[in-house]
Length: 535
Image (cartoon, rainbow, N blue to C red; front, side):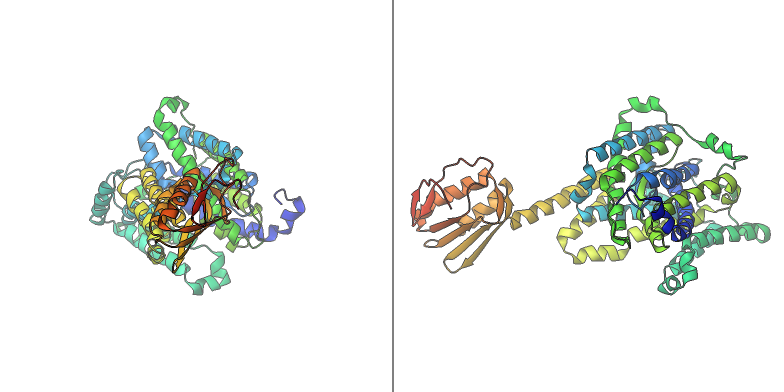
């Protein structure tokens, strides 16, 4: 089902080519905006998009997934560049991260996404959305303070970020505000159902209209009202290639001398885990959206992403993941095979080779508006309400993950969130593995699924609650495995039961522990005996 023949792709090419162009129009501002938010050279976002479209598209097992730089990794990249001390050192960490992803693919770790609490993952994305909003408001308002060449203008503590945010609101550039506010209104209007129902509007992505507005406004303002225009420092700055081969001059290569820096490996492991998780979650979502109901192999996807990140790191690009925004745009635009993703990569390449001078007219406020909308979608209030209504077992892991990431950093926040999520998983398993029902003086103790030592305290609590002169049925017919600690606790109860005139019947208890040769005391009609075999 993965290796499709040529005819399979030619049959869908009429839908794939237009879809690829739509994905390109969505991806171009996102590639630039994510590079901006990451504190990396803007060209690095485009390199990551090229690698995702031209290479990963053919290595991946998914027909519809689009790979490129992801908003979910912006905070990691921003912190990593500062920690390591140079962008070249960060690229070294990215190459190592890609190698780790490749190893994970060969180790068949594609199922790893199933072991992470979904509320924690959603909490991580919501926190990233809030951070994007905080960090993009200064760009949206035209704030000039500490605006350096690498654009890493935010200090990396939550407190200082909020202070910087407050300062930006007191130092507003009118032209940037007009551009960002109108761009946000365009993006909001484009999401309305009335627009989505119109075929013409559905084929033109909102981000493209927002960018076109920003360019048109600024060019007009520069001519007729210069005080309302934004300065050159608030425009996209891409190198204009004099000829196609000049593209190679823009590549930034990793500094492998930084391999001696221990932080390289911390950053690499963090990126490998988060990028793999985001990829696997996006892949699952794309499979659900696929009109042809295909299922992509997760291990092959990890290998493809690993190779893609190694290449991106070698050329000076950002980390790559499968991204749901561009993938869903691909599906909605009629894409059906990997050709659509490849076409989007080709369009990116053409725009870089021949139209870079026009891209430099794009105001950063436009990209900030697009990222503000992206942040809102990741952290919209409805998401918080949804998890609150699902109960504390879902809401607390979600909310604590959001708060922990905002208060500390992404890695520490995820660790705290996973610990809280694991608590609720163990708690749920703790109660579900053993149940006790009572009907007068008759009790039924059911051992369900796997019963481990974690359930010993609950089992003892149930036994202590059984009244004298009762009848107890210990039913283990539904259990697949019973831990020795559980057996010993049951045997202790069986031995002590006659003292309280408790009659016990055992159903299918033994033979489910790892060591089957195990003698036990069984109470039959109030007397303890050593059985030869127990039913």
